[in-house]
Length: 124
Image 1 (cartoon, rainbow, N blue to C red):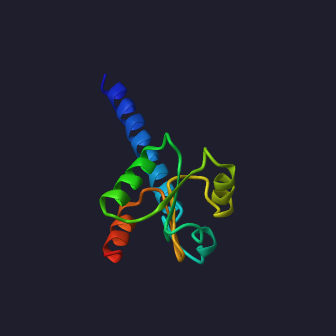
Image 2 (image 1 turned 90 degrees about the vertical axis):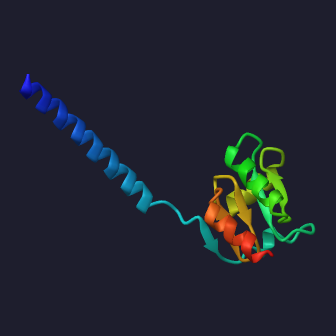
Image 3 (image 1 turned 90 degrees about the horizontal axis):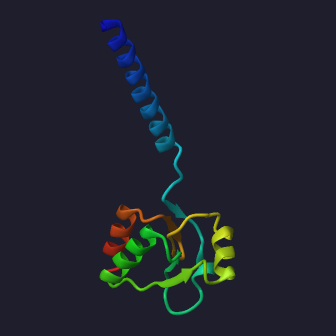
C-alpha cells in the first residue's frame, strides 16, 4: 500500500508543479495592459477624450463602464457588435479583446483596475 501512495503522491506533485509552470509561463508572457502611443485618431469624434470598446455580454466591460460612471469619468462607448466600423477600429488598434479603453496617448486592455484607479486620480 505504501508504494501505491508514493506513486499517487508523485503523480499529484508532478501535476501541481506542471500547473504552476504553465501559470508562471503565461504570467510572464502576458501582454501589457497599458500601452503608450498616439491614439488620437480614435478619440477625435464627439465630446469625450476617452473611448471604451465593449460588447453587451462581456462582464469586464460592465465593470469598466460602472467604474467610469461611478467616478464621473466621461467616455464614449462603442459596442463592437452593433457597428462593424467600431469592430474594424478595434482590429486596427491591434486588439481582439474588450474592454479596451482608448485615450489620446494610451490604451488600457481589459478591466485592469490599477490603471483605472490611476485614471480616476489624474482626472480629478
